Length: 226
Image (cartoon, rainbow, N blue to C red; front, side, top):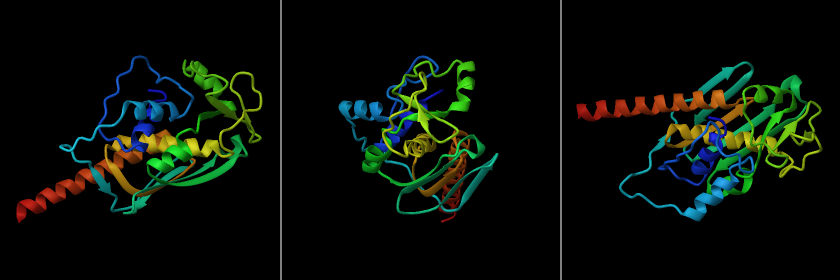
């Protein structure tokens, strides 16, 4: 479902691990193109602590590296929390290069990446139209990155006003937060993406779940032998 990672990022960034979201249609509401509107709505509604349902925490205990078509994502053990890094590089499609590192917690998520809007390469707009997606696009809720590295509005192709000079790479981190929420756990690891996107993010989430399940199985076997 298009755009679901934005609400998952909001839920994850606010430290919520138990939530039910019901929607209709094949796309999430576009909002302002970021997680900001979801963060605001969640805070207005309030969060309830479920003391009878303890939070699942998983500390990565081995390195995972995944690659696909020149893109890479790596997760390494790190017991101090979740630290995310992203290196944005579109190769020949744009000269723009950006990097950003974020130790993730509610404050850093809210202040540094929650309001970073979605974007697309100007060369990829046609594919979205063919798929019937992006119907909620406005001049304000997303932007295009051109081959020369400049940003423009998606409809009139005027110079875009960015919320951050590096809004593109911040949004890539926002997507990563949302995709890793698929693990269903509070992850402690250091994750670095280079030219990666949803595919590698989701595959990494699956690998992490597999490791967590394997560790749990080994623990149960050890307990049974005691």
